[in-house]
Image (cartoon, rainbow, N blue to C red; front, top):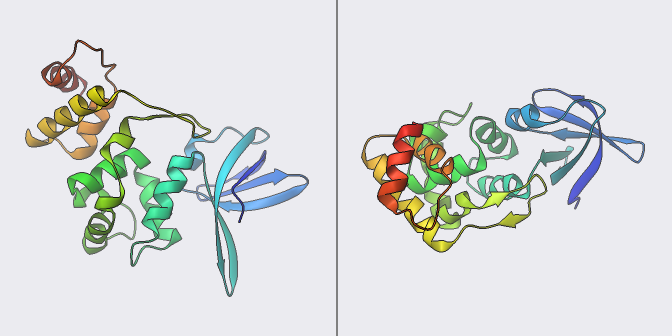
Length: 201
């Protein structure tokens, strides 16, 4: 219904944003992760929104990027995960970390979210594994959500390095975080990336 709202921040709490646009103040539910990345009160910001309409309520859920909104929409398709649960997961994990946790089957990482137990985390992985792509985690995303990708060769080498790190016993999120910090050049292979990633952990 509402794709995004661009306006001035009137108030921020850990789970709610009041955004003023055209003299209207919109109450927008947000994750604590989003709250921590917002500029201060009085600053202008563009928030991508998801509209949830029920018999007794009309809620807006807000995100700083289209990528966050996209992963949220996928989360709420999972049985037992409503908008509140989706925000809870995104409060403790970035979209990229969640995507990789799903692909690598990291139940422990997902179940760190408040209110998300082991069975629910397993259901998230089962339902969304075929709907997310590891390549998406290596695409640069601006605050506006525009995309500019890396080459397929870079992505393949990074994927292999992440797999090697998880095989060594590092968690999915640790491996992903380390590899994402590396600026890969054309002459680098998987072994080079792995060596640099180990220095980052």
